[in-house]
Image (cartoon, rainbow over all chains, first blue to last red):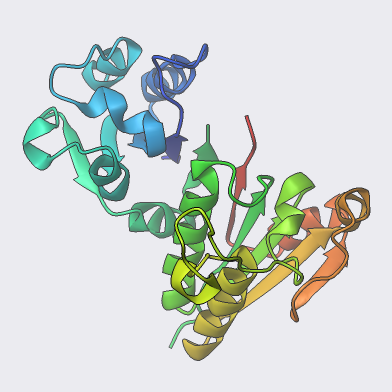
Length: 108
Length: 137
């Protein structure tokens, strides 16, 4: 089964195409692909517990795994207790792990 | 021991402008510490990252001299990453887009940086286990 790591670096509340990655992830999952979204930089803002997650919620419901870069969270003062339980903080190593494993890795 | 993987990155952002640069360097750092073979194709403004004439400066507003200001220079980060990769049995091969260099007048680059064209990115990617393109917005 093809695996994808989709990296979302954009703030969905500022960017006009914040739905692109969650929508792509949901479509790929519907086609039987294993998809992970990694939120980095301002892309981590919807990881906050009470944030409006829009299409990202739909992606989660579709079975997409959503991770958030710990460094980006800390930079923005978002503590572990402030993160939605459906989103897991991780080290950026997940990108290099994925690349080394041949997983299709796409930056947005 | 199995060969360490080769990973290629294409990057476009100039120094100091965006958070992407920090994230990009963090990914190179992880790869270098693992002793991976790293290939970078720097395009557009990113060709200024290893520009050898970058200079640290003082900060007269805050009353600090150059040493106290300790201004970070991306060329030093690139050199450090090259050394770190080599120390761990890997490598960092950095290729600057030649036309992008000429446009910006940043021909002077630190040792280890070569000049190429977008076709080199294709060659690097073709010879790598995986590639990541980090486009500017």
